[in-house]
Image (cartoon, rainbow, N blue to C red; front, top):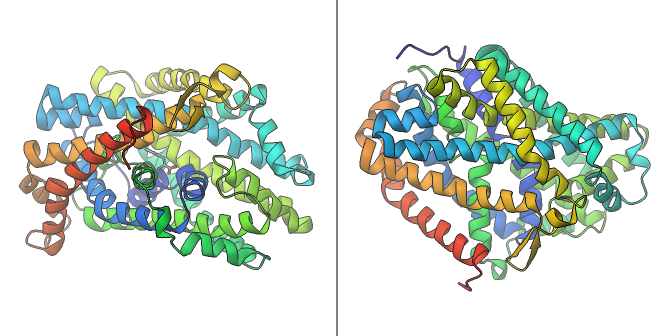
Length: 460
Ligand code: PHE
């Protein structure tokens, strides 16, 4: 196979993979899920999931990608034949479905950037009510999410070097700096201590099976695992790259941003008397209050925050779109621009029911009922792919490495760029995790999630 044109530099790959990982999952998803699942105990389980399961899966994905230089479908096909290729295809499908709703939420972030910067959002009386109205505004959301999809498409058409790499390098560091500034400000508010307690002092009585599978799903989502995004990005890196350290940096960057987002959100939530269990609107409700409190610089700081959040989302939507695009380009020999146009249009359309499910259309807002109440369409798709699809993809990938590709071939691939890998502690750790721990733990979690959450069995 011809060598693909890849990332220009080591930092380019790390920035792009971290850009894929860091996104709405960290700043929007992680705080609201932590709030709904008992606070600090969720954080603790989340960290365990990252280290024991997420990191090994990330290394495995990048290695499969670099070895095969192909999209997820092509990668599994090259190493395992037609049947295994279905796992890769399932990943491509997960990418399509996740992007469909992700793009809608990215549209919210973009809309908040515009409203705060140019339309006096910060003069609103009740931010909860404002958010409720905002997400029901079909025209505005069609426009914002449409613009967002177009931006994503433009970057993906430009390809790896000019688009993805260049975009990621500037945006990521800026986001970190702003988070730190805002956290400092948030911690100085009355009631911040209560938020810190909720976030950092675990209450073990709140530990439940729901906490565990929600944390696992979130770990996969946040690290962009289980659907082949990192197989795809891994296919563009050189043999000189040290996969072990690159995956370490990406995981650490992603986890830090999620942690910081929590450290920002919970003091604000408690100081403003918002319920931490508020759900998907949490960040959109808690943050404007603090920007308002900053007086005349509020719109600037708030606008910048939501601008950076939109950019973080953009580096993630790019990776989500890149997966099915690389599939179409490699497997069906369609040109990149045509594949991008077809997929962007299709995925935008698939996202419309999610967009309408936030109050605009009653039948989609209360779409089906499970795990204690009616769920809107967007939440259904999020639950299916976040909590089942991605961990299932990770489970199958680890089984694939263990029984088909074999860990000695994994070690061989990792050794390029890391000559001391063979015989190291890291090699033993990863092999044990990928061969035994990941398949078993993930299979159990996926089964329990389906039984308990979707089929209503009482398990614990
Ligand atoms: N990791 C991204 C986020 O946290 C979302 C994502 C999931 C991107 C899966 C690519 C693949 O926002």
